[in-house]
Length: 242
Image (cartoon, rainbow, N blue to C red):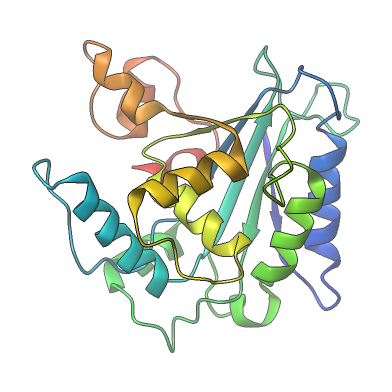
């Protein structure tokens, strides 16, 4: 499997081509490609930590405070059909592709951050010196993502027949909503936030929530994958979702 790491470039050709390829790999009106798995990088800084006893409303307030303040660093998208096949982009199945989109809004020299989190991201291959100049503009990405049909762009539209799959995906969807809203703060209440998730993404599945009913499964995504004998094969599907 190969990762297509996409930067914006001078005219934004990289991100537009990347999203067009995603759209091409998603046949409109077809139920064959039913799932999306995406991994959004963890926020560089978290001021507060929720505990198991924290009420849902307060958990959301903590999430909102973090997401409103922080910028998205990287978005990973993995598309696959009902049989688990990745897009091969004309290689006849010899190579499957996943995508990473690197954004320009976060500046490690300017924005507050936790050094250990930045070190982890650097060790995973993110070049923070290049992001402000060569990273993708999140507004351009949001416009192209809406045009792709993978998310709804108005209250009267529905996304194409895809299922979004995440692992502990509250921050994933929160950051995507922020990007799609051009940096607008998240809704004030949990109920409004969940309504927006349903409007924009349609059917969503959170594996972290589902595994609570599965004996022997616990911990982060890498731990669950190891227990099931499904070792992750690409970075963005594992290290960002611990």
